Length: 324
Ligand code: HEC
Ligand code: HEC
Image (tube, rainbow, N blue to C red; front, side):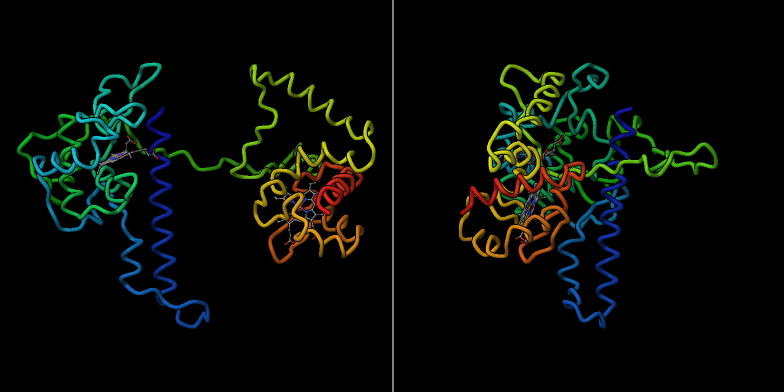
């Protein structure tokens, strides 16, 4: 089960890399688009760094376990532990064999990863954590060899090269299989179909986790729903300008508190001055219908189209009141 999930992630990574490379080569050959300029071969090479399980992408070089040990102790052990056991909460790189079916499996390079090529790619691309891509190719071969050695996959006198890297059999490789399920299963509906008007498109803001509703004493979903029900009543309890506070907090704050995506920050008077000067009706209309301005995109009703126009207007009132 875990294996299939992982392989599909890997497929996507490779796909992204292929699309990236295709795009770059398309750009390179299209000289008449009148945008930017064709990337140089050197620039493409800087991006085209993925290493595939069959070894494609590996640069020439080599590195021994012995050399790897020196580099590892200097640049990696501080986080990953001298034996790959992981310092404090930094990731373990070794061990965990036979734990994959436990409740809390220990997934390491040795216990879990299907291909040695991923290890080379990962170290080359990202490590050491504070200084990614600072290692030479030979240093990457050496540290890869050493991490394999810590996992008892190669011997201490082993020297890793592009040719023997692809021959390394990772212990868990056999548990990975190709996920042949289609990405989406959407059978065309021929009868008794759903009324399109009843299909709701839910929009959400990516990369933002609302935290306002987190309770100190737990995360009781029912209590949260009740609380939301109550806060929805708040507008009628306050004077007009404060009425929009609840809507602001639930919807608009996500962008307008921090200035995310170019949103004018609440209380930032200079930013709001010219906007307010265009008149309340303009602001209402921009907030209700959406607005593409110079600093970004204000989605209609902040993306929450179930809000009534009045709720949005009240939120605008609250924002204007707080920003002049
Ligand atoms: C400052 C701490 C730090 C240092 C130094 C460091 N790493 Fe890491 N390493 C990390 C962190 C954090 C992750 C997990 C990153 C993530 O999951 O996004 C990681 C992940 C890894 C992984 C993948 C582990 C897994 O199972 O997902 C490998 C392999 C690795 N590091 C190798 C190295 C090597 C080799 C070096 C030295 C050249 C090194 N690291 C130096 C912090 C460090
Ligand atoms: C996804 C982020 C986002 C959310 C959520 C959001 N806004 Fe905005 N808003 C923007 C951005 C970006 C702008 C600036 C557009 C520009 O001027 O380029 C903006 C501008 C505005 C403006 C000024 C329009 C103008 O004419 O200058 C008002 C008023 C406004 N938002 C009200 C609201 C209200 C009310 C809500 C909640 C119901 C809300 N916004 C939610 C991103 C957001």
